[in-house]
Length: 297
Image 1: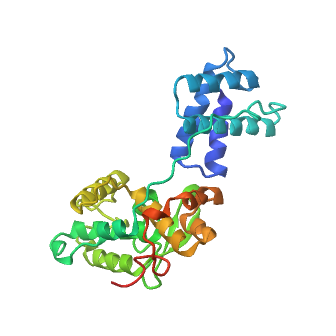
Image 2: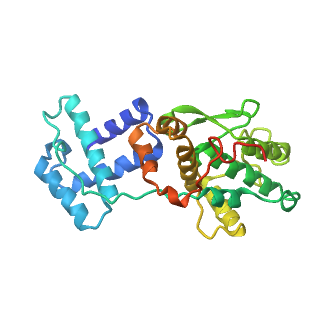
Image 3: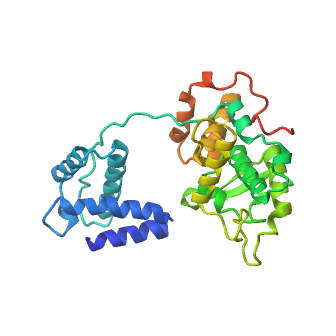
């Protein structure tokens, strides 16, 4: 691939603190440019060639969302070349990706969330891993964390149970503080009383597996799916659904879109506005306080 791509990705990593996942996505999207010209210089590509490339992706039935992401990567790369004086104009400017259907996030109703998370203490008394799972799932729903934010938490790290808040590092390494409700605090205290049974001396992770190592995102997904099945949820529940449920329920109660944006860690209010389009007829009509599990049982 053109050597300038490597320089561009390095700048993204260092200056914009892009994650490895983001860098891989950019690398794949920019690799598509090499199919559009016999020239080894990507800077030589013009708008008609890029437009033809988008049409090819559409003909290959690539999802509109993926095409939009690819175009965004192209536009960023050529804007970078323009700033460096390599090209005079950005050939990706003015190009548009196919419109994509607006999909609403799937959220649990308040009663569904309660049914999922309420679990008789007697059934967990002899199972530390279920106590750990309860703490994880309560925290996901109580604070609207991303899965990556959950598994990266350390102890004591950013968790402040005394004041009922957690500090997490989200996308682009931005930190934010989010409240932790009483139900989640109680569940976390129960897990912390058992955590030392699993923790190794050099392992700071808050949530540990049976072997004493940090849980992976895939393990959390699997445990939540199993938990939901045992609870008779009737739907596939994944960690992001708990984040969606958090946002939907708090927004329904408070109507404060900006506050929800801050708690979710969204860079743009537009990303949060999708929750205003949810059909609240499927949610409970009465919502106590700002969060249904922020009150003591």
